[in-house]
Image (cartoon, rainbow, N blue to C red; front, top):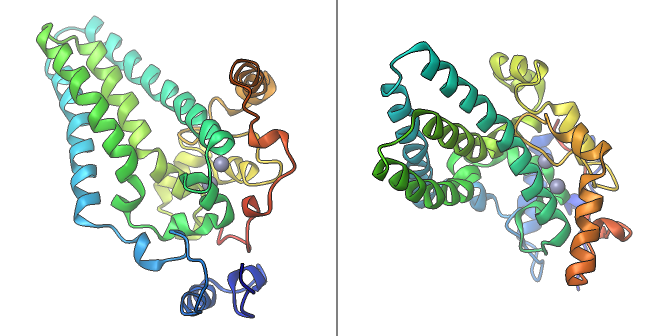
Length: 269
Ligand SMILES: [Zn+2]
Ligand SMILES: [Zn+2]
């Protein structure tokens, strides 16, 4: 246990300008005996060559099936089939990120990524691009490359490859879409704001609802397409009951929100 110094971010009003807060965070890091998490350490937000290597591998693993699918399109029917496969991949990626995010939020611990994000959501906008994407890029690369090898061994199939490439690409970039959902409108590229407002990418308003107590909805972070369906159908409540009855594990959302889950100060967005 330790006593928070008077300049600790937890004691800084939400209206404190970003640059002041960054300086204060750095000052807090110099305090002896202060517990420092990954979210606190500014150097942990930078991209490393290892992060960049995994993101490059992830991008390659997504581009190979998409390019192979594109080169195999010979007639309008196969084009339509592959276009539909891309749309289905994009839609299912949103669902996949929602289920993954729900699982981590409810059954993860302090070492899992989203808990730190709930305490300090603004740090995602300061992460380097590869730093933010490398974990999902690694998972995508290790999953997609074997699938692509099997597809190629069976002669490939344009629609299947289009689906795999689109779905995996949206999953990998979901952390970038998530970061944009925490961005300030005036600092985001106009095209990103337009895509958010069109519902193609998860909007800032929609994702902001996830960051309000009791933090038990709006888990999807690609387009947010599935959020209303999942929340209104109480899909996750049913899944939580199944997990509890089968394994006896209670989800975090059944209990009063813990202090470490609360946002320490206001976000930048
Ligand atoms: Zn969350
Ligand atoms: Zn968030």
